[in-house]
Length: 363
Image 1 (cartoon, rainbow, N blue to C red):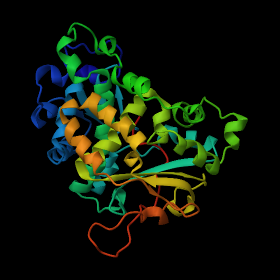
Image 2 (image 1 turned 90 degrees about the vertical axis):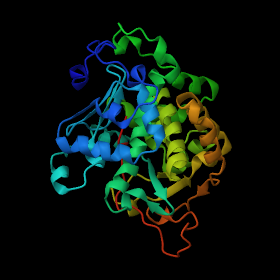
Image 3 (image 1 turned 120 degrees about the vertical axis):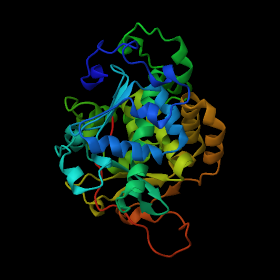
Image 4 (image 1 turned 45 degrees about the horizontal axis):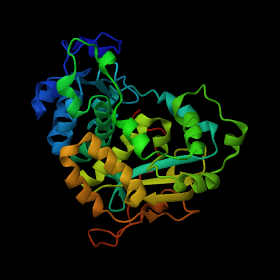
């Protein structure tokens, strides 16, 4: 497992560290925990506690992994086909200030990327009308917040090593040599995104600080993007950054609704020099974007490729999803939290997190 600690192409072979799914078709929590490396003991304890609260699908998705590294200095979380492992930032997992204190507080290096354009695309997961980041921090809320991260990174793992490929992989190969993206190519070929404008903007926003915004891109406003983005079938701006992220985003949102009944908001706003949600004015926004039939078709294709044994159940869940709810243009991100009827029947307003996340917690 030492080859997982440093991302070094060719260092990990399947003879040294086989994929979990090479050893069992139905991984248990113990199977997964035997592949976990942490920088601090509490991170391993917490990860087990989180897995104990996860839906069964999470363990099936672990089949495509060699291991999990959780460390104070990982930011952002990521999966790499160089080692076949996922590397997790523990910022979502802490419960005490002592635990929080050991986590690297350096900002995500991608934070500067967003400042090159005159719009922001925000997102959040909501239960009823409450942002899940506004829940009291306890093991249950921490588990739900970690679930979206795991669905995303495990989609990447299964993209390169889907279940049907595991029995035929040559164990003498290094992970990096055997890795071959299969599933995201299917999504891109069968149900491609069409907006070259959004694809080019995403390279500026997400992929490198060395990619400058053109004069035309820098001049685009939130109102311009409010016309461009909804006309295509992506469920998020991040889909456009690569075919790999397209698959992961389509799958992640579907699984959060299927597993928890949790909806996702996405909105196009201005780009203030702030992270206070009241400063972000919405030009366009939706809740449950994958309730749209064309957008949902892409999520269902992703689910059929990544988790075929659960497809029927996922189809049933998404078939009962509400239609997308529109946000009110000109109203700030905070005040656009009350979009759905309160499932408890209470008249209390929803709660938005006071700050926004300007970068994705993963890549």
